[in-house]
Length: 262
Image (tube, rainbow, N blue to C red; front, side):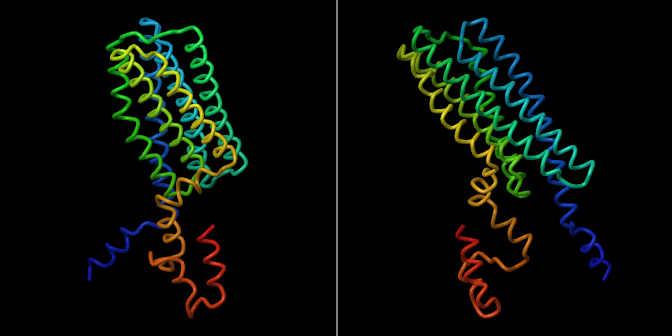
């Protein structure tokens, strides 16, 4: 008999769940700022010392990601203080995050073109390689943690920040591959070409962040159904949208099918 009240107390209300996830998102944003400030300083110092434009660019990207995380952290803090989201300010913040995507795309493109025209080639830097390897360990885990929180909250702001962290992973890969491939083959243009691919990805993600579409793209395939389930109880049981079209829902089945398919 005594176990039942305890079980009831352990169940979170929707408001408590939202607050817990928001606090987790805030912690991730704070970690992102701290890590990327250190990463950016080390990368720029190593890049300048070795004359590595790609590593300097990686350090600048770390700074851009820190700015994005600061913006996200400020909005999440405001939510916790006021108990609700200010949609107008959230939209402004989301668009500022989108601008950081465009800045990153512009920088990578300009530096890639300049590197090809001037004929610059990467140089060896054990410190830069170690930093890039560390980034390849930390950033995918951080991006996935952000994505999970963003999907659970159906929050385009957190999902935009997760997308920017994924770009940091791609930039780490391209920079590291450029250094390794050059060391093996002397093909210094590989880094610039990889940068152009990252720029295209950044523009795509920036446009979606600007339009608020990231929640749909990243949430639908990886967890939107779970969020829908939490909001609507047992109405969605994993058997597909046909389940909504039977007796108890009547003609609403067609509307529900359209909503799920959309």
